[in-house]
Image 1 (tube, rainbow, N blue to C red):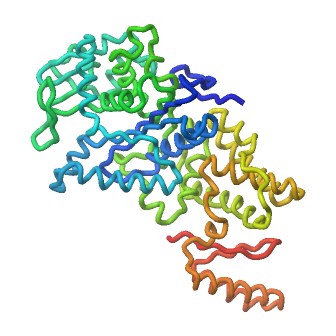
Image 2 (image 1 turned 90 degrees about the vertical axis):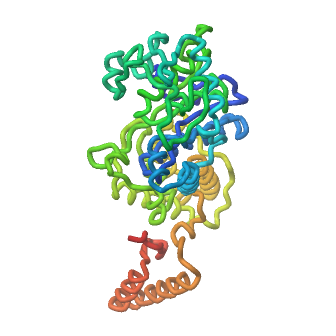
Image 3 (image 1 turned 135 degrees about the horizontal axis):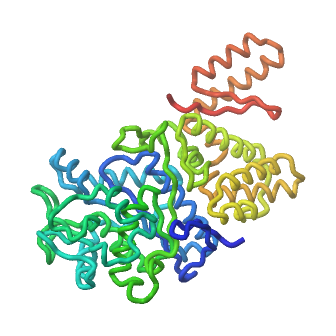
Length: 467
């Protein structure tokens, strides 16, 4: 099956054809590092990590180049640094390290490149100069602004009228603007803020130009895939596109929007209650806290259980169901510990589901079907199903742990020995129909934070999540 992806620009699924199959390029807007990432921030990381893994499987690991930027100069970063009395580097290094560790806990691969705005300043200033020379930007009172009237396709990605874009962008009213929709490429720094020299005076860049310059410098334009959350379609991605095209990528060659990115992909919001999860709303669940209580794989499963383009409701039930789903798969692998896999390739049905615009729900259903074959199939079927289950899981970022450690992770050897002894005693008590003793042993196991799972094959156990 051919990989098909939903393109926001086209508003339909399109067969994926890279510019160069030997160098497939993808860019995803990354974190602004002034605080810990919440689970909503993690959704695009996990979604596009899955796509990164799939592209590597199709085209080869060395053929896919994935960049996810770091915004390391920003009003919120500046405010945090000033409040702590430190340089912005102290803040950004702290939270970038935490971000990378937290995303790694979700089994997200590190992107090929992680460009930073502060390390791309020369390229940013050069691109702004190019836009000015191309009559797509103008200097005014220490600012440089993009001239939205210079790009006839402005609004094409978000499909908004100019009036709607002005209303929806929280546009700053300023007397030096030629048009209300024009946006800042360069602005003067406020006292105490980081500052860089430029032909238009000392200052710092606007947010949108940072990404466009980082993409050009890191990957080269046009790129194959540009990803991010739905909330970035406008104004961020709309403005990125306008800048990139007017800087010379497609504008003078009849390539239009395809001179910047061939496919635009956007994931749906993660909702908490009736609202989008957002730091500004204060309704966030931090990944940094969650990974201390819940396996990262379970968080990853919860974030991928629905289609990436649809909104996803975050709840404790969602996370608990994710844990149980993985228990089912790891349980099958544990019970088939003596089966030797006969293949290292993912199941064709799992691949077909993922190649259909990352249909994770169908892919997960196929994982369960493989788990059933591992347990009930003929010997040859079990061997193949186990190999396909492990390889399919690895492709999706799951089943990365040893089954025993999945259930008993965090238990030291002394605790494991104590639990196994109690379970053996409980089995003996049940066989002797000493129900009082069996119940007392279960209570003792509960006090040890151990959950016992009885089945036809016997009793297994796992440590409960800390409360």
